[in-house]
Image 1: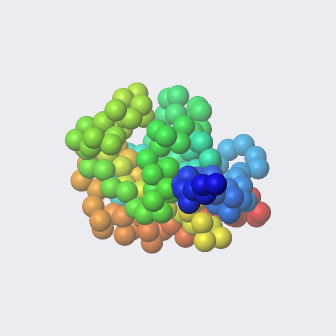
Image 2: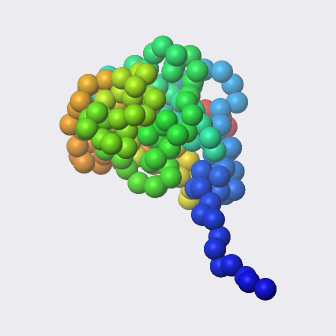
Length: 172
């Protein structure tokens, strides 16, 4: 009898503790709570970004909970497949992500989000709840943009406030 020590690596997105933490933050109603919308508008202004967002990453999709400057089909859908979402990369790696120009980045140049919407730059940091990476606070642009590590520091400093506002929108 041969016993294999091989165990397939579980995708972070499907880890039960993470899924439970995301479930606790899912909005119950339609629309974005006013305080969360004001917050994301402020983030966009602070970082001089045409678009900003708070996302929750489900097992197979990214849900846009609050956005600034997002329009068209993406705004109507309120999300996108996880494999298209840079925010899912932030959650999988539990680390910030900085993309200056998607057209110069082999990992993103053929991403359908880039090809369909024209996203060219992105900066995002993880949001945590119950010790789990559940989503991302991010800024993005349709132009190449030199978001910096200082921008990531600003986003990191604001991430806990985003989670507080998510919780307040559900429980408050």
